[in-house]
Amino acid sequence: MSGGVDSSVTAALYAEAGYDVVGITLQLYDDGAARGRSRACCAGQDIHDARRVASHLGIAHYVLDYEDRFRSEVIDDFADSYLRGETPIPCITCNQTVKFRDLLAAARDLDADALATGHYVRRVAGALGPEMHRAHDHERDQSYFLFATTKEQLAFLRFPLGDMAKSDVRRHAERLGLAVAEKPDSQDICFVPGGNYAAVIERLRPGTAEAGDIVDLAGNVVGRHAGIIHYTVGQRRGLGIAATEPLYVIAVDAASRRITVGPKAALLCDRVVLRNRHFIDRGAESRSAGDVTVRLRSTHPGAAAHLTLLENGAAEIRLAQPEPATACGQAAVCYRGDKLLGGGWIARMERTAELQQASAA
Figure 1 (cartoon, rainbow, N blue to C red):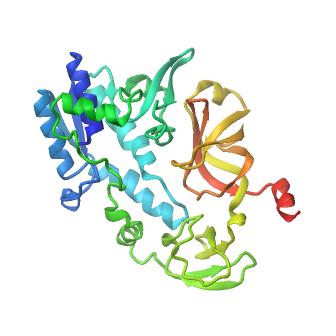
Figure 2 (cartoon, rainbow, N blue to C red):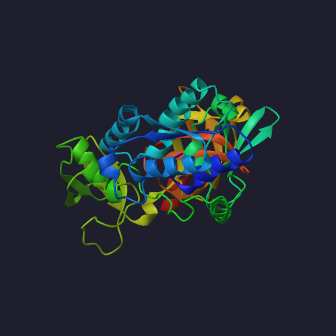
Figure 3 (cartoon, one colour):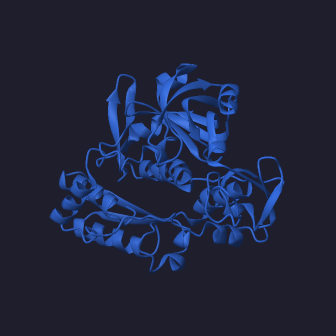
């Protein structure tokens, strides 16, 4: 129970159905830093909101202090990833570690039969066991952020909101008399006030925002930057360079502290190499290759592609049509229809010889 309407309705619906419900809220970061922020989660006012909902429902409620493990597993990884020139997704790391590993273990310690969350995904019975599918409302779907869920975890998890629209969830909250019925959704990364990532990284890793060169595709210096942590692949704004055409960040080189910029066409890639692949679908992991739909970032609608599994936990995705490059550290998540197969972390995006020849023609 994060204190928002989704997890509150999840608890309420199971309590209404007669289950013995225990609400668990995680304290993930400093309460003082979160106080007064209305669109974060897992600290400050949200803990009080979760406690108030649990009291209204008449269910047990516990707050678990996971601050130390959240810092070591999520926040430190977030900062170090930026220093490597990547653009991380801490919500996936949080789900993979603190929530679906540690919280699930706590649920088992409580002798629970299942762990229910307010995520918008569907758990569907399949021939080889439970499958994860996209939510009925694709605009709310959160399966991208859960690609690293294991088969064993999925067997224990429940997602009652997967077939609902957000408006349905709020109507349930009103019907059940929940005080959070009109509470806005959390939008910021919980430990990044106002979306200022660079300020958080500079606080966690003092002195790491070192200046460097901005170069064009030919390697010519066209400007200076105040630290690679301020830039991500595909970025257009904030470059501070006068040019005759719009320029975009094409690459971030952490070792040389160099930012490469170029025209939008230079972003197009048709080969994606993944590291640390993870496939929840048994069929996808057992086959060495297959056609999939891949999402290259959380807002990406999906593109046709061919997936090939490589050695050492790597994978290759060949896109049917070129796509603008996505920053390293983001996730590439594969589907067949609405069924989540799995995915991995983007190690690099490249232009195959075929695309290079087509671009030169």
